[in-house]
Image 1 (cartoon, protein in one colour):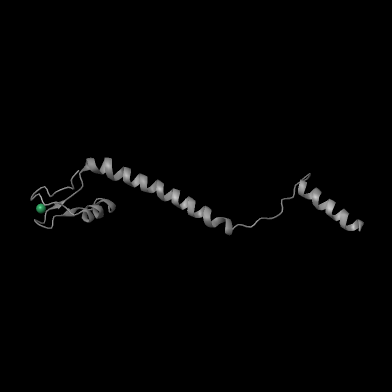
Image 2 (image 1 turned 180 degrees about the vertical axis):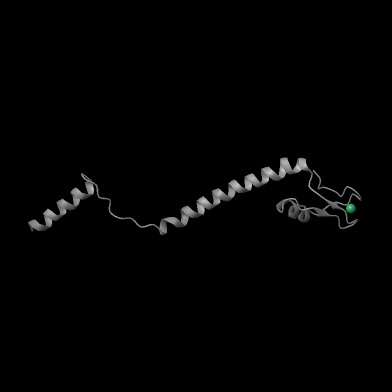
Length: 102
Ligand SMILES: [Zn+2]
């Protein structure tokens, strides 16, 4: 696989220049030799750029999920859960009886 070249003078583009064009959608590349501006072909836009953005979006959501699960447990507080017939209430009542018996 070769890096894309200028359609006019066949100058091979630098990888960083191509990456800049990929990450900033619809950004044209200007050839540093002949000055021609070239846009990403619509076929490449559909089969390369769109899947790239979908994969990156899914990875970002996954990464945010992992990061939030690392920090959210430190921000959460819990209260006693009182319901009728709850085991916790029975344990508390038993402890009160033990304390009052002494
Ligand atoms: Zn050129």
